[in-house]
Amino acid sequence: MDNQKGLPEVEKLKTLLQTADLPTNLHDKALEQIERINLSVKYGAHLSQIDLTAKYIDWIVNLPWNKKTDDLLDINHAKTVLDKNHFGLEKVKNRILEYLSVLLIQKKDVSSVTSHAPILFFVGLAGTGKTTLSKSIAETMGRKFVRIPFGGLSSALDLRGQSKTTTHAEPGMIIRALRRADSKNPVILLDELDRVIPTSREEIMGVLIEILDPEQNATFNDYFIDYPFDLSQVLFVATANNTNNISAAVMDRLETITMPSYSDIEKIEIGKRFILPKYLKETGLTESNLKIEDSVWPK
Image (tube, rainbow, N blue to C red; front, side, top):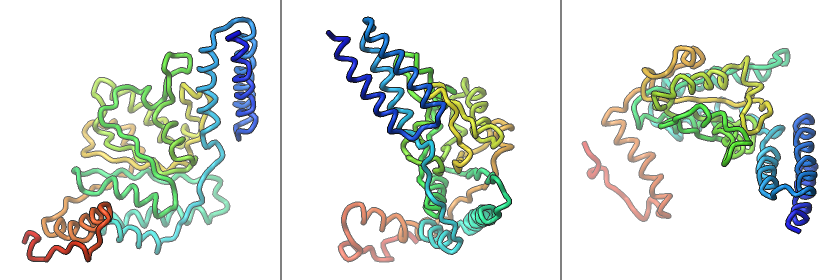
């Protein structure tokens, strides 16, 4: 009787699969898996097998295989966004504008089959604007933004996922980020590359090379999904406090931008123009509700 209860669940999986926009080979592969489960349930297999298959189907049908956002490549708009979000940092902002200009030229070049943008790598102390600059790049381009923290990362499987046959298996952080973004061309921030666990550094750097290399990342294989996902349209950005713990092979694929430290005067201006308005907005207050005189700020 319990097994008969599982048959409607199998039919639901078939329906879910039929309505999904999947690569043909993956669709056929998943359908074969459902048919095997269907046969197993009829002959007395445990219903937990349906749960494992349902989890896998849920993941593949919710990935953005063919979904992406349209790029907004307007240099004037980009400058406005960068100036709105960041005080000072003129050299850094100018480099980002140059970067966006190259993307614009590549997009207009109809003879270019594909384009490989450099991977910007912001290096500097905490609080110098590395993460917010990465968010601003996504904002200027009209792309989704997702952050992947590398601090304390202890295994390459955290990036690549585990086989779906493993108990409690999940996709890796790259695939999970794409599902959150619901787009195949988001800006993905690889945050604090220098803070991975030392004992796993070599294998993690090896996976990073595959993710960042345009010759390899069009067929990235997550062990859980077990089907190539095209990362070539993802715009990766990376950060670190320093480059001491990052392999030379990974560094070769990054364009380092050193973040300058703010002076005391610049910190005060940031407090006035960015931090205070931000917290006023978060608390529901306006500048008319709370005013801090210039004499209160440090000199």
